[in-house]
Length: 355
Image 1 (cartoon, helix red, strand yellow):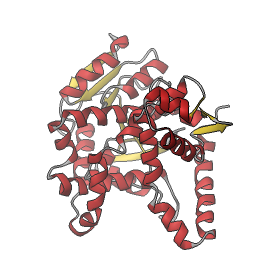
Image 2 (cartoon, helix red, strand yellow):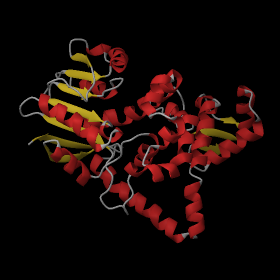
Image 3 (cartoon, helix red, strand yellow):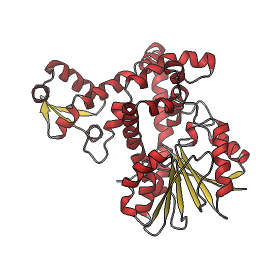
Image 4 (cartoon, one colour):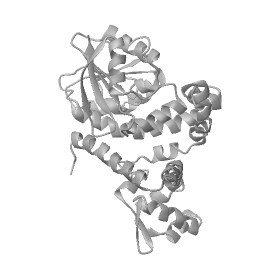
């Protein structure tokens, strides 16, 4: 049964509140130590994926000895990993055998809901090491990644193709979740043409064009990204235009703009530059849809944006923003917020228009 978007968003703070109550109920030392060991489940999941165990269990339930034999792994170690993940409902133990749960199937490479590439990405050394310099970020204001590697993350990616490949595949896993949610939450039937600014591989635009067969789309991004998107959007020949370029300088002139996880990558100065470029190009009566995870105005209220904001602080120069902060930023760029639409994913859609 599909849960309505509004109910998903209503339940999220309730669940977070229950977790908060539990933390206050247990000894404070245990509560903070549980937070400190959060990396351990992440690394167990990475090993589960990279060793091939997840894909092996996708073929059917098996004992740890069978899995180890099939993959030439150390059987006692395999059993310990599977026992650990059973406690997180990733696998389920039935007698001596382990089988994947619905959650666990997302760790396999061929499942329609696979996020296996993302699970591998979070444990990459270049992803983990900068966190050890986060205390220096507090002293200097520079991103921990820059302090660790001597360059910004996106510059580093350009110089290391293997890193770019891992990052792109992981972001595709993330995009698969919010692409469908965005296409479902907003009525694009009268929004043509729709320009996906910084659209990357085209997953969001693909979801929109698939759901609304009568509208046209434009994908605008750097030349290398546009070339990758051509393959993803090949089925929409005649309905989609590709516009390579730097969105800080200019964007295509259309009715509707979609910015998904773009503004959170940048500080206010760069974000305003992009928004003003859109303001110069937007067609009369046009709208801008900004899809981001919104931080809560009340710091005591947990949100998924708190997690990604920590990532932004460590890896990039951007940040997650609250509803109030987005309203203020958009006002500076000459836009007014019309409404905010929740989606079934972590993102909400801020619908705005030129003042």
